[in-house]
Length: 131
Image 1: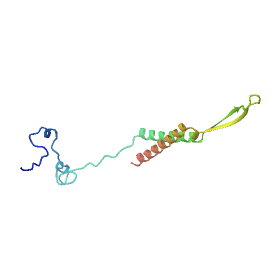
Image 2 (image 1 turned 30 degrees about the vertical axis):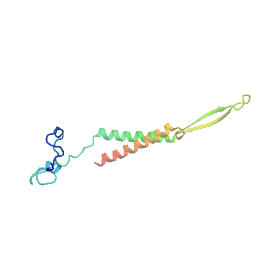
Image 3 (image 1 turned 180 degrees about the horizontal axis):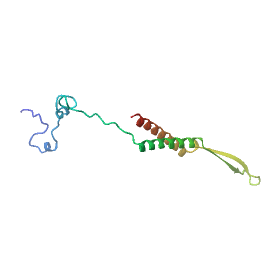
Image 4 (image 1 turned 45 degrees about the vertical axis):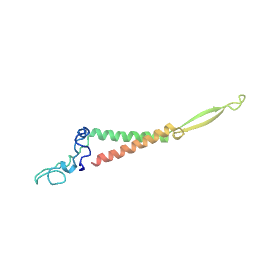
């Protein structure tokens, strides 16, 4: 019995669901690698990208706001005088309690998110200006 080059015999209906496969080289036209033919064919590589002012302003604004937010959150500390009464018959002792951003996990998350967003804004602004 001869071996058929097709995976499915021609009498099965499964073969109609699968279109014949073509190799990428079969779709090329001409002899060159990129598919152009002839000597006078013009090839457009790409158009130069222009940066819109709105895009640049928004990127710089995002950079400034995220860096400002991270700086304000990082240097901020709050001091509050808290009265502590040890014995009900004695007067309360006033103790200064200080709160910083790294005492609360939500502020730590906010600081890290602002640093990441500021870094992304700085990198994307530099990349846009470099084009």
